[in-house]
Image (cartoon, rainbow, N blue to C red; front, side):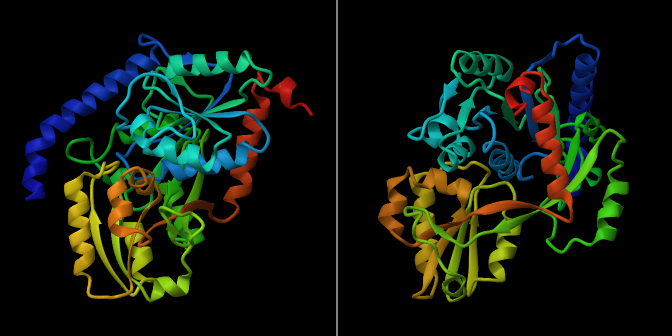
Length: 366
């Protein structure tokens, strides 16, 4: 059982904790070198493996900042089938740059999206290329960079999943923690993500006390706002809530935490079946055949497949999804919403940091 497996894996978990702690000590002492840049750099990351909502929060920051400044998003491009430094364009595939960078580039085509595992060198290239144009970059968003100690971000945002609190978790491989809980001290902002929309003020105060937020940190609470289903192959085709309520749904997901989406659909669809794959899963022919069989087995004339926005970026590039399911496959878009007065405070602090950055004072004075 899980308890016995946990006991067997405990020595590995302890060894991993020691190695990660030693690595952080070496960086903190300056023995391992970190570099800070004069361009505004905002890191969004987590301590828990997968599923804290990094991409929707990156997209929130893009929407906030892209109106006023020239912005770049830098990601390692997890599970892409290429290597090295790549500047994405609108024709880049998920296989070339990764599904999350592809999603961001598709939604914000005027934003520079770069993938590179060596983020320190990538930042240098981004800054150099920007300085050689008439419009230098004012800010760089670093996706999933909390553990990337070779770069010291100007502002660090740590996400904690409301449903998976880090004080109840353990280090890998027993639990899901990439590093010990006390590492959260490196963050400037901590966001408790995926909160219930009706989170009570008393619970916010209890969580603030529970997570032992340091004086230099600010705690925020966010929830996900789910949109209406959008056709994966035709973004102009948006399903109404009334149509969803009369549909039998097969949820197909390749994300770390599909439960919140399942809960959302249970309340809104006629019925719900689900197939869950690993995070960033690349669908092969055998997977699509299984999806097809599951879909055909649903005893309803009015049935659809629903997936996530991240999965949709990969599915569009696989012709069998179009062949088998035509206009029967939709994704649910999500947006981040701050609870209580968090949005105004968060937006103001982000904008003030970017404006105060020494590269931007002259550029953004007006």
